[in-house]
Length: 307
Image 1: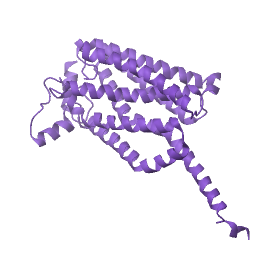
Image 2 (image 1 turned 90 degrees about the horizontal axis):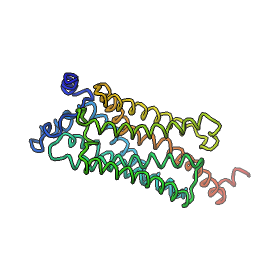
Image 3 (image 1 turned 180 degrees about the horizontal axis):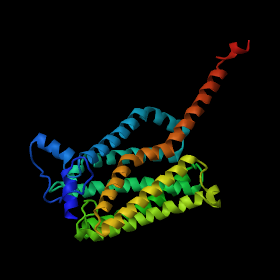
Image 4 (image 1 turned 30 degrees about the vertical axis):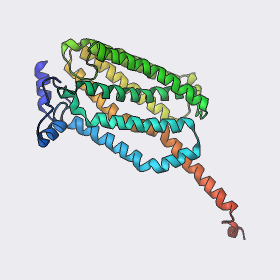
């Protein structure tokens, strides 16, 4: 087992286990050394590059589309979409910071900063997940303030409990939830992640069962939502399986878990955007075209076509 970890750490193009956070990277050094550590140490080049490129590309896409998106949101007047778009921006920036500062996980003296950043980033992404699930279970595109309050209240309650438990485990009991290592003394941490992933897998599995049963009429009749549930069910099932293997000391389980974490932080937010917001913006495009056509028709621009 130890040979597996040693070999995986030597390759910068793999997704290895992280090194001991108390003895790997140093907080000081030259600029060149710091850049090398930032890119190649701790997890490896491919791991860091995938996270940084994917998260940065999505934030740049949001920035490029921001002016048009705000115009469409203000015209559509959907409270849920406006609030969700704002939350997506906030969480995307947190995730970008989390991806950029991966080296903190293995830097002595940065453990507390890394734990706080990881706690808020993971909780923000979980808030988006729970909000979308709560929205799905409502069965339609509700845009009232009451629907927004109900959806966000349920999400905030669940995520608040999740934050409290993670804070107690991390800062109170000293369990390194956000510092990945496969050492035997961290078996309690992996058991907690098993429970976490089991709950998420069960929720997505239940919604998937609803889609495949007579209860599907209660859910939005949109293929994008069904594909989203399938993807998230598979991802969480794989993470659950990986955590179970890691609890038993299997090196492949930790590699698989690291891969699911990379996929989640790199691609979940774009998936969420495509599933929940892209269709809304496309529908607003068609609606705005009809509005502009009606305004031009009322102004007499097409009168010559009838003469």
